[in-house]
Length: 212
Image (cartoon, rainbow, N blue to C red; front, side):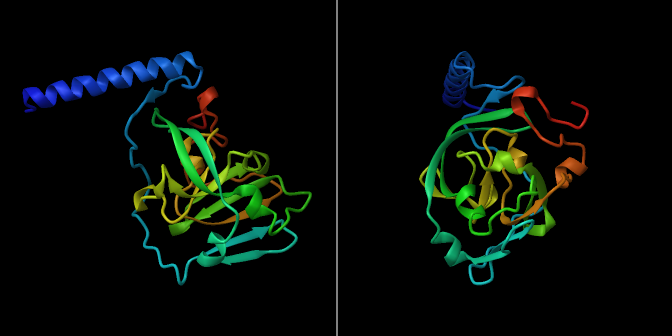
């Protein structure tokens, strides 16, 4: 049972969270059905994969003019940028003002040049995990492959060494432990989409499940 001091601390933190939540809601930044969190919950399917910089690679395949394979050293030499963005999880928490640093999707895709018929992307990650995202969504300036979060390297449980960040969609589209992308002319469901999640995942429309 929590002592008096611990109870007071928890009360202060909850009061602070609720006040910030009201502010974000008044600013129009809190999607419907979401609650602000001051923490960063860890949610993923399967175990945290091991990373070996000597064998790790990133591949671009499918409807591209030139398939690409990048080593870890080559990927880190690509131009990098910083994006400040909110994160909304399908499990109803929202974390605001995340500072991501990494390589913009636009920088990556221009290495391979998408063919004109490419409309969708399958994102491939460790352990066979996949997610589908329309190409136009990935071409937004806020989409990047993150290497760092809030000034520090990504924690392993949050996607180290590389995480896709698609801030305007639910966070399951911001795939952890990314290993490549495959461009397609037609859409196809990824892992969570095959297991009941919405094919697109817009938090402002509460597109959580395939019945929404």
